[in-house]
Length: 261
Image (tube, rainbow, N blue to C red):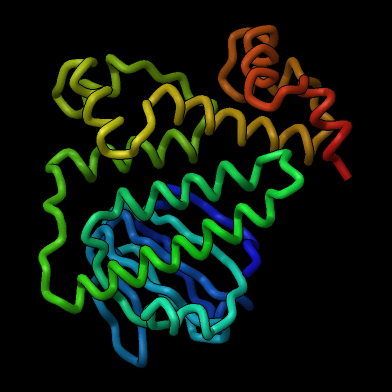
């Protein structure tokens, strides 16, 4: 098994529309975090948040937003078809996740491993991909048994929009009090809701989004570290460099020198 790319909580506006008549060239797992419309086997289906589909390589991929926004997780990878059969997970079939957070925990772990400096990183990622397929196979079996999915909190959509905004606009200025107001809850209750929903604190997600943004600028531009700190939402480069080194065990300049091609 081989991981190609992974995205968590990617957000788009209501015009989002993907059309790949010949697929994406690999297997694609989609987990919808907002309502969407999927065209499959010549028919259109309305899907609910926390629905999933595993597209087989070469299968037509057509899906779009059906509200004013669209959010999903996606994972591109190669996999022996025998594995999906062994784990009772069908291709090209929409099914509901009974407990999406458990699947998202595995995806988050894979995302963190993809940034690891470990020499066994690929082995760890393959193990987690296998665990993901096992988990999805269990979820598919539960969906076929008629067991109802866990009820979504009425805060779920708002929390997912906030998280998607954090990752799509990591340089934005945010504070807990303002985000709590969007849910009409206290800051402490907001933090409880956020952590309960995603398994990490809002602060950790903001930091993670900023670091991913910093990675992009370090590796794809010649911007100075000071300017990168500014576009990533930091008031000064000292704070940025301190957080970066704590996360990667190297300075931004060392990271750029080691990884830039």
